[in-house]
Length: 463
Image (cartoon, rainbow, N blue to C red; front, side):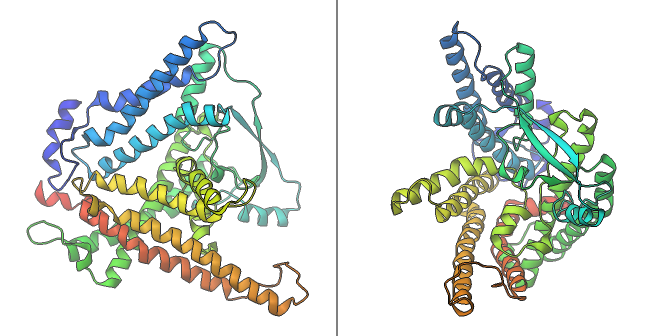
């Protein structure tokens, strides 16, 4: 397989990896998750005191080696036949390394927490049919996951196991499940987005096939058609090279940005549904549990904050929580003197977006030849979104305060009745404008890195 990788090295002449990196080898790809898995087997405490120190040292050494191998993946290797896979290699390396540090050092030593299994139980609603149907529409898997309900909605509860695995067989199963649970589904490591509400709807494999055929694939094809049209008609030169993103008219920049966003959203949904279909026969095993990526329809979103909280996938939310949100909240409390029980919303927002900016900019760095200034588009995008969230929250509070002062002179702080019919319209125009305007920074970097060219199939000109 390594020879195959090497043979394909010249198949993407526009790939600009970090200087000094070499084509990814099979061993380099397999070792980090394998060593991580072996360390996870040793993570749950062993009964008794015998050999505890030896086990602890062995576990820590394995974890440190796995973390180091994950972090060095994007710094030592690239995928020679794909810009997109090289970009994803950087995400995997950062995510894997950070998750190892979280699992073996941050969570156990700072919070005394080792993930426990969670079992999900579902019971039918006892509500009248008309209320039940309305509930299924507003609190279900169909929310922008492009799924249509064919079953009654259910109430889902999660029950945490009291103990941790002890036998080697249970440890091996526990470790495999935890390593594969990207958002912690099935464990007490679950990200917040996995469970926004107990009201849900469980889609069948046919529901997901129906979703893919009638919603996901058409949207994906339309997005790719727009990307190909703009690339071949506007960006590709006669010599097969790509023009800079800024050579496009402003309207074409916005259109390409929207198409890239639509492609990413549906591509994530397609991959999510495909894995759910493949693993559906394992039900009720946790590996078959695929909670929704998106929990609110696009047209129901009314702010930038609601988009990032409910309208977009949060596959990296644990990473951003541990390495962005928590440090941001801590810094704000230290600077302002707030107590631990007081909210630190500005630090929370800025910390989350700064960590996301770093992760995505680092991934871009690995496909623009290691030139830092060419990888800052993603950072500008997420920084702009973070500032927009703070601005919109400040404006919202100011407007509600003015309305309350005018309508409730008695000092009642109830916000009921303070909304206006046009608030939703303004909110939708606002978040769409912010994402499309700031998203151009993201699209500019993708054009520069050759990602748009690869998506459009422009590499065929040079094969």
